[in-house]
Image (cartoon, rainbow, N blue to C red):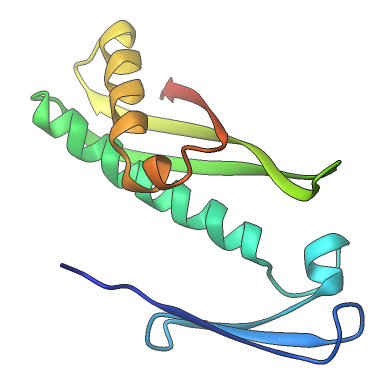
Length: 141
């Protein structure tokens, strides 16, 4: 069983405080703050990290599912657009749209769409985020 980790340190109150986060064992270290999360300030935020993780996981899942279905993936580029909105319950991740562009040898679009959906269902991060609506826009290049 693999255990993955991330670390974060926050100092100060919510509005004026600041944070530093680390992914894995120093692969990425960076700042985050109130303005990087709720406005357009410099740094990252938890929602961007979730979106990046989802995009990376889906790209790998689609490549694996294509290969399992006897197709040769050349490349899969995925952008995850995570919608972070204020609701009656507070700030909430309301949906994620996976935008995947793939180059695949000798595949019909209908087969590609079926496999792309299968990969979304099988993606471990998609399963972890099952409480959120996840849309898929997959396109062959």
